[in-house]
Amino acid sequence: MCSSDLFAGYLHIVLHETGHLIAVRGVRYTPRLVVTGPLTVQWEGGRRTISATRDWRWLFGGNVWFSSRRRTRGRDLAVCVAGPLANLLAVGAVLAVGRLLGEPGYFGVYVRANLTCAALVLLVNLLPLPRSAEGYATDGRQILDLLRGRRIA
Image (cartoon, rainbow, N blue to C red; front, side, top):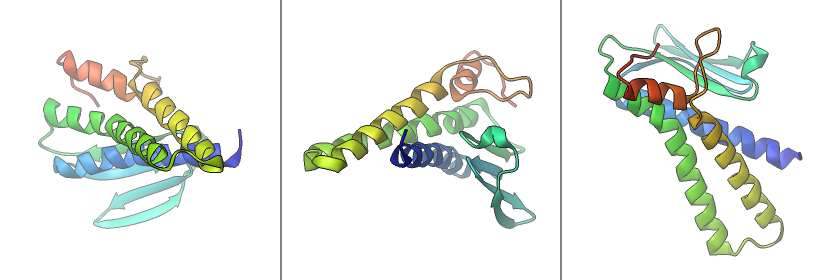
């Protein structure tokens, strides 16, 4: 794995979590904490701070924590779907640019690395894996729970 693969992978994790964050704001939930690999963004008392991620388990992933007094399953579902949708849109954009430019030389390698990373982040997140001991779940698990009429944490 080369540095461009790591960069592309991190880029797609950031895109994924940004998709969730945009949806959190769109449904008028309040963002509390966003972790994207080595960076953590926290909202507290109307202020936003950015710091290094302290928990090594998040170095190759991410999460968005939010709160709201008016949570609904529909809004929660929109937030859960937004991350994978961002990756799907990224795959489409990379394919379109690759086709437009014909994937010449090193750019073709970059296109393939981006497609691989976007598809990997998208597919892994859509797997309905069991919740972790701490209660964390993939988007696929949360989407399945919401479709079954269960609330998520």
